[in-house]
Image 1 (cartoon, one colour):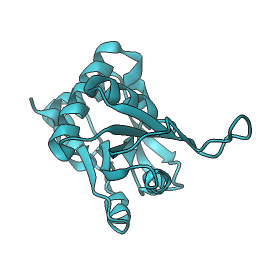
Image 2: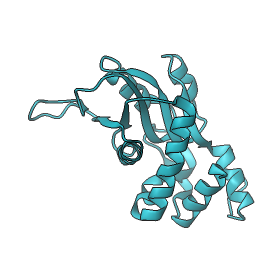
Image 3: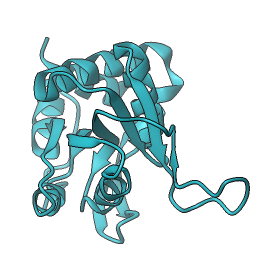
Image 4: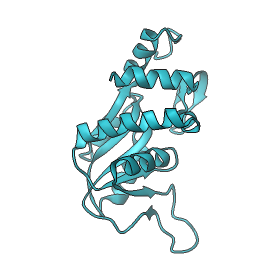
Length: 190
């Protein structure tokens, strides 16, 4: 299966790639916005994307014990992946909750090897925060995202000895969209 083309078709069918002027959560201005949460609303799109993510997780990391989601967009992808592969699930909150046991990392206790999962990587700040939060509990083998925007995440994570893996980077996604005859503005990546 050509994962890039399959994911491109799903993204196009769910209108999950938008063009215009956007401010990302990182504060970066962008001419496009990937809203991969739109894939969750269609069971077939969600299942197919989880199948692709599972193949890539096994290809990149082999065996691991726990899938850790990045709040909030990474949690459904981590949940689906953990369920598909029969792995434990954890996630790291955006901030410590102010009630109950005031937990930052949910799913404890866990041990062994883990991978961190998110939908999209931009600067890598969110993934880095999650990696640092779970390192006391497991050996972090790496991070996996559906799309790398190629805006510094890989380099940032390399500085803390974490490899960023992805199904496709934004250049490859745009190329696959064009191969599928799906219109993408010429200046979208500039």
